[in-house]
Length: 216
Image (cartoon, rainbow, N blue to C red; front, top):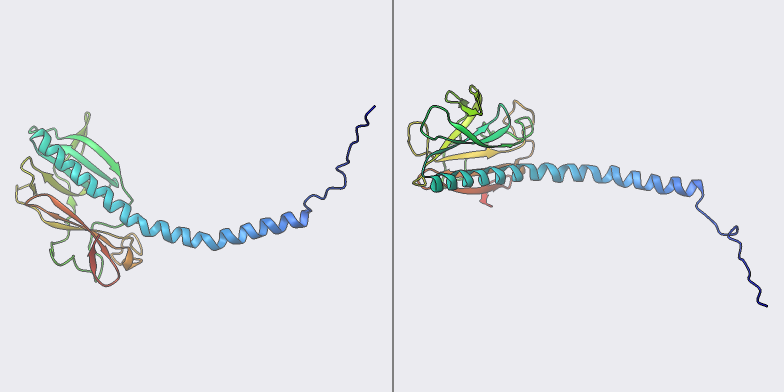
């Protein structure tokens, strides 16, 4: 007859409250140390992410114009903090095709050149000009008008023009300001730029290293 023996677990040692508190304290200290680095990393890439999103929308607008054989308007709307792609189909009711959210001007500014920083040279294009929208567009039966926008029109021949059908070559700056109303970058190394050539619709991305721009 076999005998089954049982081993008591009462002698096994668990974690004491003091040990658990020490572990929690170590985790808290690590979090406090890492948060500034995470915030800095996120802030650094906001300019880059927004610039590339806008470039993608420029290329999408250009492709729509080429495929549909008519003009598509792209508006960077800082009143609504959105980028709109609008079908200028020839009648009075310009139709909203796509609307994508962007960061508010208090987070990333685009409507003014950063203080003390000139456009990439070459090509040395003038800064994008934001004005009150007097044309407007329709989303269903609702008309939007009077917002502050930078509007560019992509034509079926590949060119980019203004309201007077004059080719537009411009530099769009993207950077975090020290405050919502300031054109002073909180960190010059986070300044980004997009150059747009009106003759062909070509776009180019630039990074600022604190002294000069280099192509990204």
